[in-house]
Image 1 (tube, helix red, strand yellow):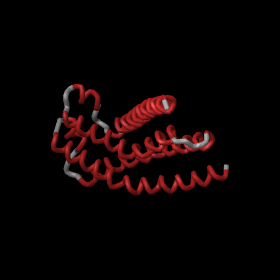
Image 2 (image 1 turned 30 degrees about the vertical axis):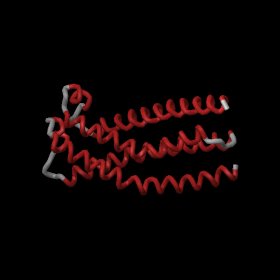
Image 3 (image 1 turned 45 degrees about the vertical axis):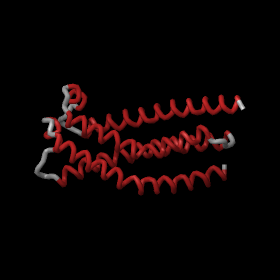
Image 4 (image 1 turned 90 degrees about the vertical axis):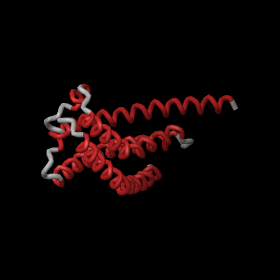
Length: 175
């Protein structure tokens, strides 16, 4: 009984550490790409100056990345505590990490396309210039448009990964 509790506590700790590492990696990667996409704004300088508009925009981008990556992080965390044979667990973790990297790429691409889409739809507004000037109204609308796209895209993205999981399960059975 105590051994089960200890195993549960250790696995819970490992899951927490893994979740922190995977989330931090995703956010670091995503925000580095976002820095490159937002020309004319040095985001961290603006945030340090107290530019709320840039802070709102960056916060929305962080939430978008989590929307895209949370299911992949959950897949990895599940496999850490699953009671599968070691071979299946290792193969599952390899596939889950590959899916995590694919989701990070898709998330970055979707955010890039969303920023460009919003820019094309709002031809009379220089979003980056407005953000740099601290225009909170633009930051809110821009951020909510990005979040709306992230939420709308999350279902087909999850369907894609469900298909990949089916292929991966078939591959594991063969191996």
